[in-house]
Image 1 (cartoon, rainbow, N blue to C red):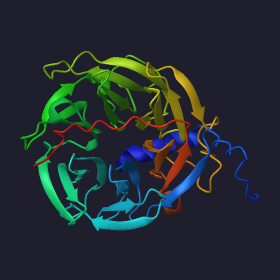
Image 2 (image 1 turned 135 degrees about the vertical axis):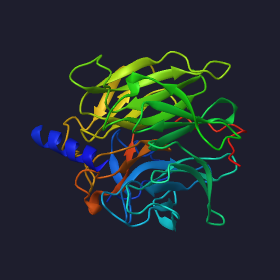
Image 3 (image 1 turned 90 degrees about the horizontal axis):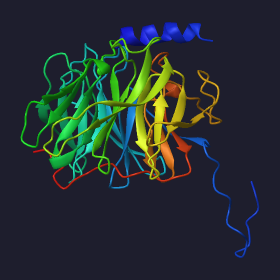
Image 4 (image 1 turned 90 degrees about the vertical axis):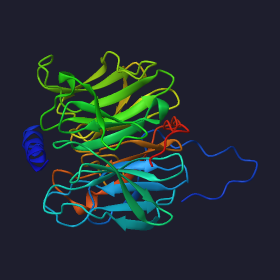
Length: 348
């Protein structure tokens, strides 16, 4: 991971108060699209990579791989207004190796679903008791990244280091290699965001680099991967191709079907139609990350819907600037589709 960030840094361095209105007055105009505010800073060890909006109305994020830090990762909880409420220290990590935790999802009964990188485990956290529980362990070499529920209560997980989509069945203790493709080969910049679309019955997958030889220079992609009625993977199809070093990461899906994808490499968000046509991007100028808020985009890693905004995890993965490690809130002008959470979305 540290080698990947160093490589990315090298590439990027070469790239160039109003009075109260009467009751009868018209309502205030809507907040302009792309208006950005700071939702909250993220305390040490920092490095947020994904934000989870829970059905309990609260917001969660973990501290992901934090350079050479030997500090244990933490899970943070905020109110919908961005007030930090609680945090929990992740037990059992290998602290002298790359380690981090992603609050990747939740179960139907409210447990947080965590992906821990140093132990390659799926864990749950009961926020009522503070209890962590290991559910499953990935094989050696895996770097679990994002997770989504799919049909039948199976959990699907992307792998940042290998071209694999893992599947964890309801009673499994070892995730199974469900889908593999050279299209998911990314070397140092692998597979990231993942969401199941029940209406389309497909997985939407973000890929930072595509190293299968189909495109030069090296670009990223957003794919669609159908899930057949029997549970087998269908044929992978490309929805969108990014520009070089844009590095698509986590994303949210609006009620319109539009995808709001974070571009880690150019410090932008891109809006795509459901079919993968580019609609808009923000800010217009890449790299600087100037979004009009007190904190510029600095390797934004996700876009999670909260109301008509998306919450963006600002990781500062290259420079490690603690003051930039925050959750930013960006108005997009529509509400999001609820993440798929079937009745069988349980981990025992």
